[in-house]
Image (cartoon, rainbow, N blue to C red; front, side, top):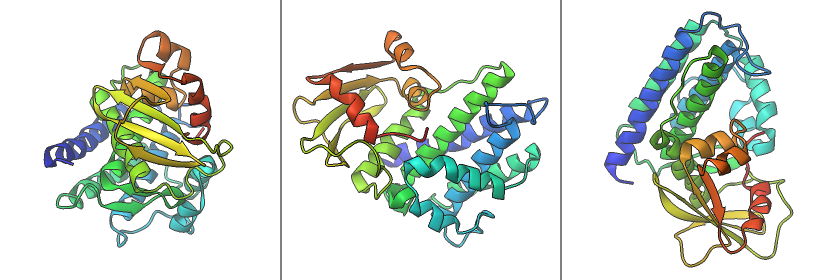
Length: 280
C-alpha cells in the first residue's frame, strides 16, 4: 500500500470519529432508542468497546476492556457468534454516560492513530475466529462501525449523516479483501454447504482495486481479475455497506444502480453470500 493511502485511511478514522462524537454530543437524550434493541448510549458503548479492543490488538500491552477472557472469546467465535459476543461485551462494559463514552472513544482512536504512525499497514493482527487482519483492514472495520452506527443514531434523531464512498470503501478494500488475502481462520465456518466447484465473484467500484473473491470448499481467497468470473458485482461502497448490514434493501440498491450484478452465472451470488456474510 502506498504511504499516501495509509495516511488517508488513518486520517479518515480521525475525521469520522470526530463527526460521530459531534453527532452524539448533539443528541438531547442519550437514553432514547437508536435501534430496536439499543439506546443511543448503548450504541456509543458498543462503538467505544470496539475501539478499545482494537487498541489492544494494536498493542497487547494496552489495558484490556473489562470483558472476561476477551481475546480468548474473540478468537473462539465465528461470524455467527458476533451478536452474542456483543451482548457479553455490553453487559461487561457498563458505562452509559455519553460524555465518558466519547472520551473513551476519542482516547482509543487517538491511540490507534499514534501507535501505527510508523507501522506497515499490511502487518496483521489475529482477529475474530483467528482471521489475520491487516492494520489497514482493522482501521477500515472501525471506520465502518462509526459510519453505520452514526447512520443509526442520525436516523433516530432525524438528522443528516453523510457516508462518503471513499471512507466506506476501506471496509471492502482493506477489511474484506485484506482478510481474504491473509487467511480467514474459522471466521466464516458454518456458512453454506461446501461446493466442489469454485464460485468466482469479481467486485468493482470507483474506489477500490478490482478483485476476484473465490469460494472453494468453504474457503475464500482473493485474486486479481483473470478472465470471465461467474458473477460480477459493481458497487458504490456506501450503498454496499448499508445493504450488507441491513440498512438498505437489496431491491432498492439494485433499482438505484448503486449495486449491480452480472456475469456468466449471477444466480450463484446467493450461494456465495451464504458463506461470505456479515453478522446479522
